[in-house]
Length: 284
Image 1 (spheres, rainbow, N blue to C red):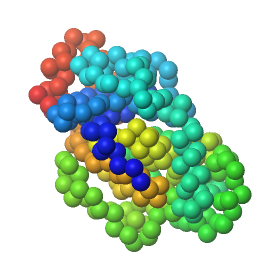
Image 2: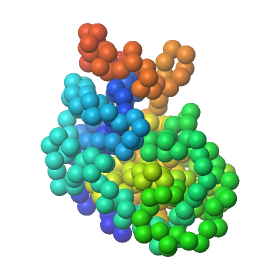
Image 3: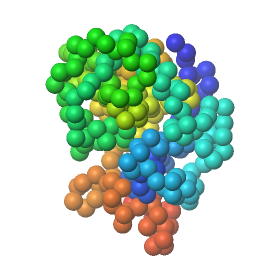
């Protein structure tokens, strides 16, 4: 098991090009940049472009432009390169297949042929409104995992240790505890259409890029518990976690990319200054 701290502090910005960035992203990415600068350390930009249903190439250019307008700068990324690239997930399949094979060979995952209407969401980060439901376990006892030379064609689920408490201390929100099998069930790590799921991809990437601290929204706290199980199974060093409070609209609903009026692009074009965007994001 390698220790990522040998590279010093390494944080990351990890937007998905599935829509325009909004005020919630601005808050999280500003916090990530501030924490990297305070240590001081290295900030990495990673393009999480694995969602084939919602990915649009034009959103890649937009997110880089909007992040730079916010004043954010990174030392490594898809636009500037670096020692641990490539920095677009669509170019990192070999890392994900290697992790999948390791988990398959050691019995941590199993093939699943159950149908799910929401499988298309598995490549994207879950959130408080579309979190994975607890899997009933119909395929859990399958013993044919070794027969699959490649992951495509079936879904692959991580077998969680039922009843185990997954605890971690969040650097912003303090102690967190989840119980495997109660708060979340066997979760997807690979989709039948040959797309690695969020829970596997980010773990593999954070390890390969030697990320020491993950800054992201509080809607991903439960995903952190899942990912700690994957990290343990893969014998990776776990990063620290800092989950930011969510930015919500006037109705109390968390911001999503459908909130175009609160997108950074719309605010820019409306003449709102960076300083006012920071205040609107709760940082001013």
